[in-house]
Figure: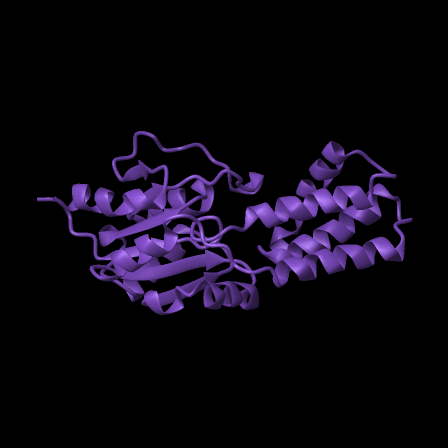
Length: 234
């Protein structure tokens, strides 16, 4: 007999709805604003450095991204960035914060199907207000039994979430598009880790897949989760 999985955790951004697409669009806009000072590739590298450097200060999310863009603009222009460019960066970030939610294919159908048989927990990191807005607009808020908006995803976070809202990490599964944040720490916590790749994933979230781990699985789409659960629990 397979082990009964009682609790399923879902990541939000780029697992249930589009997110990185809007970051990439804003980065292109950012490159256009600074085209008189530097080329897109080195600008992207400088921005990524700033984002990594600032995670400890601002955390994950659009607001930290906006501040990192402003910092990068100041650096590459040696302090000569026009106020109009700063204003455009702020406007771009505000547009991101107001962008309508675009659910990914099979996201709603999968979540609603699993809600009939399992406890569902949304576990996402980022800005509290923005993540709450996205969840409300997604129409999926009432489907989840619990929502955890955290500053980072570590094994201790998964252990606490799956113990508080379920029967422990050993009887839980975490599903997401980030190997670094959704899969590896969930596996370390003792849960199943299911990787559902997205076409665009932030470089900070890249990590090597634990191919030999007995609780690691990879699916092409969320639509395969129901069948995967049936296989595991049979």
